[in-house]
Length: 99
Image: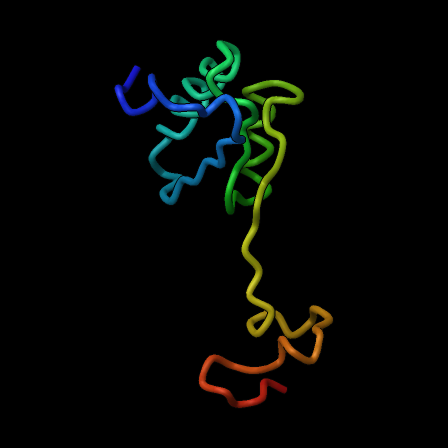
């Protein structure tokens, strides 16, 4: 186990896992390692960050029911005009109103 993880209090926090390159299947190996750490009590919960539906389904199928507790997904409301928006969210970063 890496030294940085042996002496920390990760058992108190959920770990959110992010992977950028799906063509590199190392994410499954890494998630299985994190699942082992959770089983051993070093991690309280395991979540995903910005995984698409296909890969989330793959992960949940491979790791089993209840292994993943969340998938935090970033949504840029100014890029998704079909989403309802509050007035405070309708401005672009340069201050112009997004219509």
